Amino acid sequence: MTAIPLTLHRDRFDAGRVRALRRGDHLLVMDRVSGRWVTVDAPTGQLLPLVASAPHRLPEQVRGPVGELRALLLERGIGVLGSERRFEQLNTVILKLTNACNYACSYCYDYETFERAVVLSRDTAVSALTQALDLAERDLWVILHGGEPMLVWQLVEELVTTGRLLAAERGKRVRFAGQSNLSRLNDDIVEFSLRHGIAWGVSIDGGPDLHDHFRVDHQGRGTYVHFARALERYPSFVRGCGVMSTITAANQGRLSELARHFRDLGMASWDWSLFQPIGRGRDQQATFALDPEVLVTAWGELFDAVEAGEFDGFPVLPVKKYLDNFIAGPGGNMCMRPECGAGRDLLSISSDGSVEACDCIDPTGPLAGLGSVGEGLSAARDSEVAARIRSRDLSGTECAKCIWYGVCGGTCLAHAPALDAVWPEACAVALCAFDRISYSLANSPRLLDYQRSLG
Ligand SMILES: C[S@@+](CC[C@H](N)C(=O)[O-])C[C@H]1O[C@@H](n2cnc3c(N)ncnc32)[C@H](O)[C@@H]1O
Ligand code: SF4
Ligand code: SF4
Ligand code: SF4
Image 1: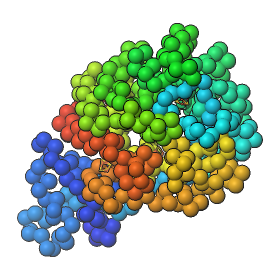
Image 2: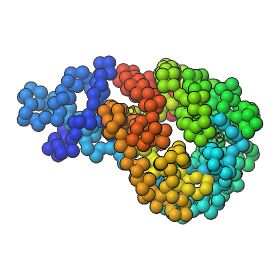
Image 3: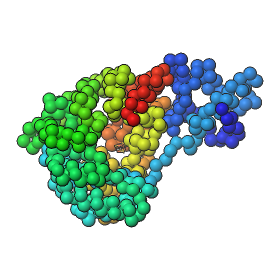
């Protein structure tokens, strides 16, 4: 181990952000801000309280081992001020192509009674793409969203084609993904999507009984049948899509069943979106609202099944995203880090051309309205509301002491009851997830085997 002279780092080392947690025979030592960690054996862990002391104040016999432990922490960036990654450059833009939809899911957040059906104008969309590409350092992800984006397919084709040209002119890379109900899938959509590598996700809430509970059309009829038809007609294309299930009171206790259903259908992956009481979901909150106890119990069962190898080869994202973030450290997932993407590396363009920090933000709430595409994406990011969102401060919450803060991020600000508060249901899941994952990794190779099985 290379010893790093402490003198070089003394003013950068902050023992106050280092936390330790017993994990069987090992001790997890974690920087609660940067999310960096290491496991050490129990005798080494006993020296932790001494790492911040100046060497000449330590008894001679522990000076060497304490120095080695301190060197290990410094080498891993644990407790080192400034070791956390920062994300300042725009890299993702959500385009809400229309707020119209051929479904009327009873929880849909993307519906407000005061809104009329509008389609994002081609000029506004191209202007947003151009500005986003200018702001992006090298890579830009464009998420095609709605409403139902496949209802305006011509616009999708135009934007993908134009986006590629604009990116090439700037020596940058643009990639497209989208979220859809897939009810309008046809030969043209499949062919164009495959040719341009558009990564589609499909929203299905479980088998027909669960799905048809809330995902209904404007006549109240269940819509699983349209997914089943798409799967039958375009099996390999549909199986290439990741599934997203909205988790409500109706399916929160049946997570393992959902994961098995989509694995057995041969889908690419399964993810979840936890119910948020906005849009149509605002009206019947009691029907949809999650119960943290039921949710955490179901998550624990799912975790047990993943750990036991039942889902090897199949990405169960409600487990995998916590696992990946814990192992690789915060960064890749813009929703699981202390400074989330909203108004920072992410902007969302609504179908009327207004700009939001994230599409999850309540359009009727105080965090809405950064400006418009016409006024500019730069101005939107520089707006007071965006600055307020970026200044989220969780020091008055339980996150201020939590060992998992660096890898959790304090939950989604748009789902929390207030900007500087925490979303309780997601906090309950995160506490359970990081506890189970860190314990498992310290004592068994199973989760690493699972990660490897996904390629
Ligand atoms: C608003 S939809 C737009 C794209 C497309 N129409 C679809 O359903 O996939 C995007 C995703 O948000 C989910 N969603 C809708 N309302 C929600 C809510 N109130 N809370 C959490 N997720 C919700 C949907 O199920 C879907 O997976
Ligand atoms: S969740 Fe998607 S499919 Fe359902 S009503 Fe909302 S926009 Fe339409
Ligand atoms: S939201 Fe919960 S799990 Fe996450 S950092 Fe805060 S207290 Fe910890
Ligand atoms: S507001 Fe929520 S959904 Fe949006 S980037 Fe932040 S954490 Fe993610």
